[in-house]
Image 1 (cartoon, protein in one colour):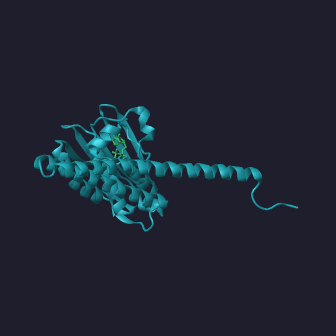
Image 2 (spheres, helix red, strand yellow; image 1 turned 180 degrees about the vertical axis):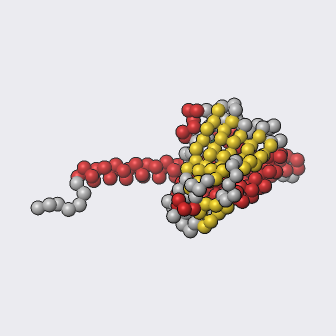
Image 3 (cartoon, protein in one colour; image 1 turned 90 degrees about the vertical axis):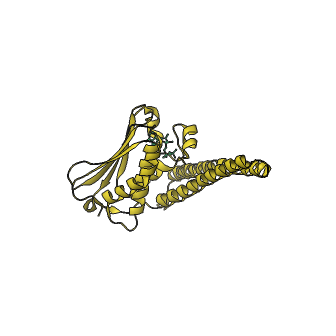
Length: 254
Ligand code: ADP
């Protein structure tokens, strides 16, 4: 008589797979807890210091209060990035895609980012590559906006004063391609394969200084993939980095 159900060796594989998935989940919870613990500890220490000196030293008190604000902002950013990422990971593609003008989204991102580029003395430029008139893709405008904002924000963060960041886009009937190129510190070749992992930072100390959550590029990769596209990176240490996002056009995603 034929037996129904999985063979013993198949059961073994799925038990192993289950252990692997459980390990990924445990690692994620451990990472998140660790990432939340750092700002939570800073908040407690700052609050204690503030209480101690509030009556005696108003200047020092103001300094601690500002530090408290910046650590709180960092914690809020971390929580909001985590929520975005969880949402993006739970869907394999955009649920209700609508026509989105990528060029319009980029213009919005550039104008929001201009003040922080100016503060750092960076030239933030837009260049239309090619002569396409239509930059529409099917997708989610908010997700696309947050993807490009993450890339431009990183380009500004990791480019020293006096450098430049250039955003360009080109389109043909098959796809829209967006490039974010900076003249910044670059990424060592060995580290490139890991930069899209959650919480991975090339330089932990620098990322803490700039207030990064280590989740930006994971969000970028998920948004690109949920739109049927992809993101690639080229970088030379000390010279700069270029991220390219490839998004298939309307008729390709149907
Ligand atoms: P973070 O919040 O630390 O910026 P991301 O996920 O956005 O986290 O990026 C991961 C890491 O990749 C960063 O910590 C940084 O080391 C590196 N990185 C990202 N973008 C750039 C860039 N434009 N130039 C140099 N390094 C970058």
